[in-house]
Length: 185
Image (cartoon, rainbow, N blue to C red; front, top):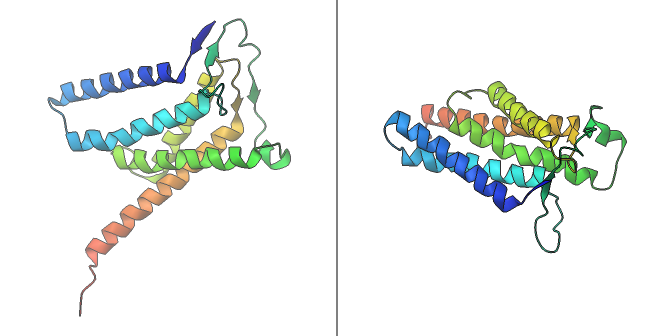
């Protein structure tokens, strides 16, 4: 059995982040510090989403619980393929789960649209949010105490869409205000 603490996962994410950003700086032959500071918002999104999706929500003895991998226990996978079950089965905590999954991906929709030039419209940002959520849901299958749920995928994608809508609406308003500046009388 392999046990991973949140701090260990944070170190892994951070090392991977530094390696990727170092490789990008090497390819571009320099570091754009303004862009790197902006990209920290993406790093923060990844860390927060990882904390919430992979580790127990409630503290265990005052600490974040452990993520456990055991190849002998991962089968059968815990997967819900029935969409929108939270609408029919109002289990304890359904509202927090529903609104939390949406709210957690709103920053993804905002900051990924802001940080990545290729994500230049609402559809592309929403699709990237879907892909990120799908990656998380599939990776949760490796950990027998976690489950994958089509509802999480739907709600996370909705959150990324809302975030993209906010971002691109703000961009459009800024462009419009620059074209038609307010004149003082």
